[in-house]
Image (cartoon, rainbow, N blue to C red; front, side, top):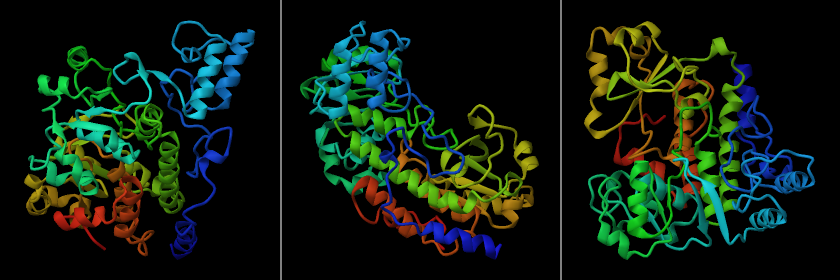
Length: 428
């Protein structure tokens, strides 16, 4: 074990600003073991002619080949979305590459095709997870209206880390909730776009009629994959919104930053054979209600029961959890669940679980009113140290998490704020 640790920690101390992933014109070489040169998701923006994860010179070359008849047309080769693939599409791709398109045509996560006029200057966010994305991209100055959860003094505003970074957002005009927006207020804001979060698609038409602007369902920030590069995952969300708000380079720097942090974690856990990895169960509300996959746990090098199955969130038989007998248990923290771990320790049946006997049961933050891709990424350090303390004994989770959150949200000490305001998390 000492030999392995000796190899791991020089890697954990890799220089922070090393050669970016984006230096490779053929796509990012991931630092994580076993990752392909290109991410697997498809960026749903017209102009992504080769149907991969980004728009680059390869897309321009592909459209040229389509025009010449040496390549088959693809859905997104029609860069201007007018139904014809011609020289105008080459011009649109060049504008996308130069960062000065007059409009962008995309398919949002509801499956709706739309064209958005650029630049987008006035935005209404109908959910905290949409607001988070804008802050992470440094596009929060476009916001003119926010949801009722984000308004200063609301029931949940004290739990939203992004309001610590950008407290002024809590004083913006409230448009109510996504389910029940204030129609008069929404109509008065003269918005260029609504970021709709998880509003039901059948309400998009109503919202569009009220606001007279595009209603975009951003990617739902899927966390049910082995990493952040899954369909509708954080990387796709950052890139899609990066193109919409003219923040592509910022989106790419976020992805590069996260990949380097995940690589540093993987430098320790990536050396483990599959049979050596510890199992982790993630529950919410009660022990037998959980997700079968959660990206930060998997990126931390743990295995999750049913992680290879179709992801789900719901209840299973308690006997099944007892049968799995996981090495580590993570409990999603909410104030009303603050006593859950102590209750598990007192329960005679649950006390037989390996994780409970070894005191390897931990609260984790996960999201606050929807997934927080930034906080989940930072918390991967916490999860990794909880699962493999011998590999990360010299790592300050607080320092690493604070650094990640400062890069993503632009404010120092956000992780310290979280563990101080809610002192239920382990501090080593």
